[in-house]
Image (cartoon, rainbow, N blue to C red; front, side):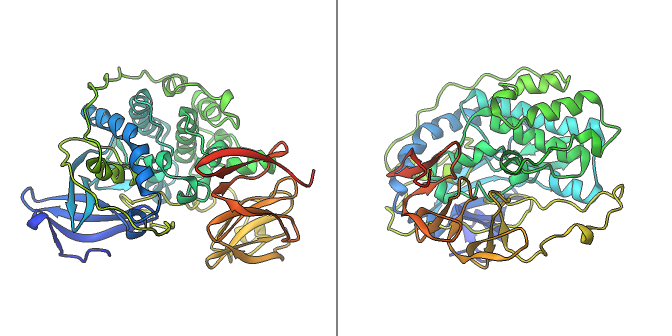
Length: 455
């Protein structure tokens, strides 16, 4: 149940001002810290997440992550949002963090157009140096896209919304494969948590900042032979060094990208400041206290002391769902970035490029001649003429490959052929499309591979 504007928390310490966003993991509020007369952001889990049947597993899986995040909090990096308090209100654990005023990088470019190279590189370098520290502690952000890069003032960037939820939640509860696809490498869709994911995402963010254009989807490049237009073709004033650095970060295959964030920043010919060593590990209490910490991790946040140790009530069984949240200053989960309007340097009218008119609530790239589209709350498939081939009936869907596509029916995933016939019955917790004759599937919390029965 969302708190109303003006509602007081912690005996009047905080006063709710408004809801900033709501997603599959939690609700984000702007609130006033009364004693300090300062705005803060408060995040708390939504009802469905705190009652999820696998909640106890989340607690155990977050134990290691919580210890690492506590170390990260000691560094107080100037380009990572600072978390100040963890408390319990009406049996809900809540996290308070700094409210970052200003706009995010996406909004700035949308409003102003492409940025000067030096300004864009400075923002990205600041975030990259923050990620060096994060990677040294064994964490991958996974969502360092323009919507999560806040610009509180000119020349300063701050990274928000750590994707720790993606580290501890089953991928059926995350929104990775539908959100911010223009900034995500294709291997992230299969759950990769390597630093090269952040290198690609940050390189794509720099692409957007210096061109004002969103790059081609990695999935489209992988499966539909789409080409990544070099950023210099969008911005002729871009230096060759930055152009090459962006293309290197956005190599389709992770093995061709720089292995570390520092190595990539070096290709930008920017000297990186020394990274502060992590503070000694903090001892975290176990048991019921960690339940509160786990929820913090599920909300995708970084922990900084002081932190209250609180109990969290035992969960009941429900199923978590994903709900979109608006782009804004800070939100509880990342949202798809809408590409900006075409550059004035391209006089081709947009209307003349449209093959299938805008009518869907979400869509995936074409593969094997069909594309998954969302109509209302259900997914179906269309061909390239826009004709409905398989009617909207699935809770979720993936792309066709090798003649089959994973689809979600109820709470389980199975596979259908292009006629819509069920080839492999729904029985998996999660599934990915076929590639090289095999498809990844999740059974009882573990991933394996199945062969294509049609081959």
